[in-house]
Length: 295
Image (cartoon, rainbow, N blue to C red; front, side, top):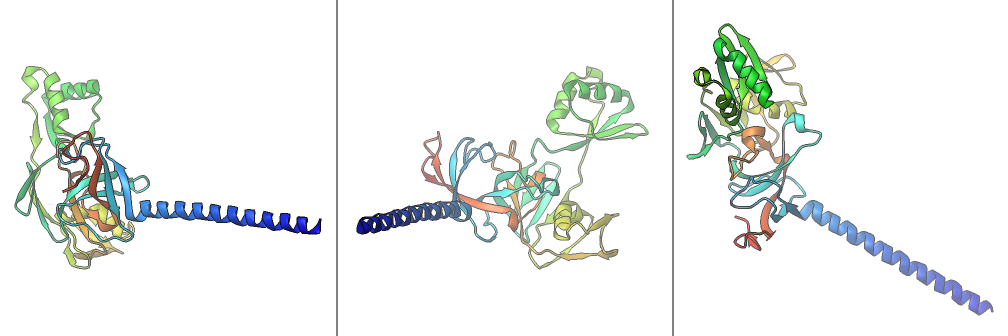
């Protein structure tokens, strides 16, 4: 009887060891898969038309993910999170092609952007400033309310008012106005300017235009300590004419400029916000894209 009890005890121990090893193996495998997904490769389902016609809404693609930030390469398609401070809690994940590299000069013009000699049009969702004379103001405001278009940055002036609308919103309002008022208001042209994409640890000159382009980045890099006044930046009460960024920055654009959200909306993107590079489409309804490397 004693031998039988000892055999049963030993058998129980062996069963528990096997169970422990099985559970440990499952946990290690799960950890490995999570690690691969988090640090190496992840499958991504595209939910926007931002990269038409290179990729389509609904495609499934693989993305290289980085265990440390190594930046982006020109013309590659990348996943990145919005760098806007207002998006810091729940930053949306965006997709775009890397067009501007650290140190590149980007010319911003009324009809679009010129980067390294290549012209990219403005998004139709870009907000423009419109001047509405007094005789058309009441009708315009009434139509805005009717169409449920918000009064963005509305400002009353001596001879009328100014407000911000997208070109499509302006078209909607104009179509609803009486014919006599359709040409009474006009867009105020945005002055052309250049911005330089910040390069890590290089002196970056600060002026009114660079402050406009890099305001969010400067606030983020200074921990919110930067103060802006009359086209100047102040740190600890002292005017700062140059700034050394701690990260490289990039400029991303959607292939589908009419629909995509990109650097035209969220500004320059720091290396730390780059999530990964798209490299392979493993499912698409388009046979020309399915099972193909992404260029």
